[in-house]
Length: 187
Image (tube, rainbow, N blue to C red; front, top):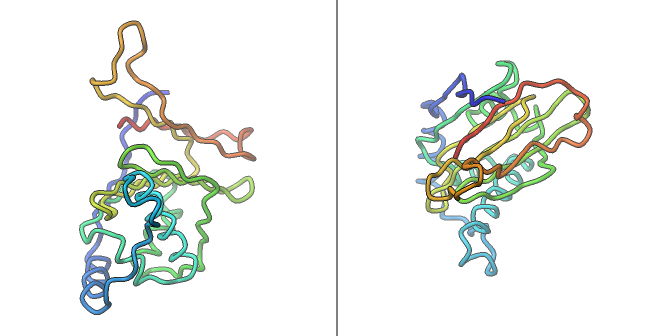
């Protein structure tokens, strides 16, 4: 599998920026999704924020979702254009009920939180969220694509050991027999 850049990069459009700005001005600051036990652990904080995001999406609390997103959220998407479900939900083009994002697993790797989900044999997605200071600043969505995340930082190289350690790989339980394109995400 070769490293392939994501073919589409989206910047949050003006309607999402307006939703985020208005929501932050009009609503009082909501309670933090981080529990007492996770307050001193940045990875647990990031995972709690992403858990809160998916809960808010499922319940249609878009004002809460907007509070978790940076107004200049950077989007990356790989997959069929008709499958840009998260972008349509976050920008208000679609209802939260149009496509249900129910993660089967959520894992943390540094500032990145990786959520993976699938529904039957036809739908598989991976979301990679990047957080800075408790705010989601970047979102990468991979739809019907196998994903491998590798560490390419020079400070983790060891003599005699391959310099690119695999940190995470797609694990869709009921899709292993399917042929999907594969991408490598280097962090």
